[in-house]
Length: 306
Image (cartoon, rainbow, N blue to C red):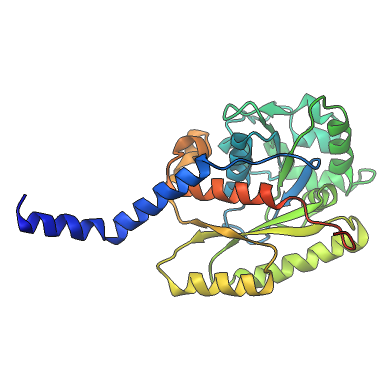
């Protein structure tokens, strides 16, 4: 090989692309060597952000799939009328499918509507259908309208032979009765935040809503997890947003951030999460790292307990 060829090869070995590939390979290796334990009861997290387009549903399904891949038993409740979480998990959700609508409005048991995702035998989904779009109005006249999901979920979990490790509730991007039901049923709030200029504005509004729920409906509720999504490390703005969010919420923000990724965006069109669609991609590795972090952190401690 000529000196010129050697110089070109050396330059490529030290290029940003090669450094990224080496970093990704090292991260994949660390994940393969990571061991996690599931203990301490079922954690119920509502995934919410009233600002749309922040990766809320994408984060829900990919974190859930990654935890199931780690060995956890996971239920995803699709509470968004668009049904995108159901689609990404490969769950049929046509208008005649038993769904979360039937649970909330018709008193159907969750056990009669839940389906197993083809992604993983440990990954379950309570799907959404188009009927859920009218549930906000129908819930108004229901008895205990804010607690119907909570009641159904407790009944379902009490009847399981093998307990769930995690429940993720994917909310619509609005504060209506569906989202209030999710907040009432959960013990933790999981907030995906896009690394962009208006991130903190939407966050402050959502935290105000959480405080209202804590005061009137669910004092157990706590913001436990904040995940930065659509992170572009090439921009100074993304780093500034990350620093600012971490300054305000040092204990809640995950160290892992989710980069912008074409593979993550492509996966739902194939009825898959990126965890199975392209497990070696940067997006899949990031979501697997975030899942490990969430599991290892454990549930937030109650005040006054060490």
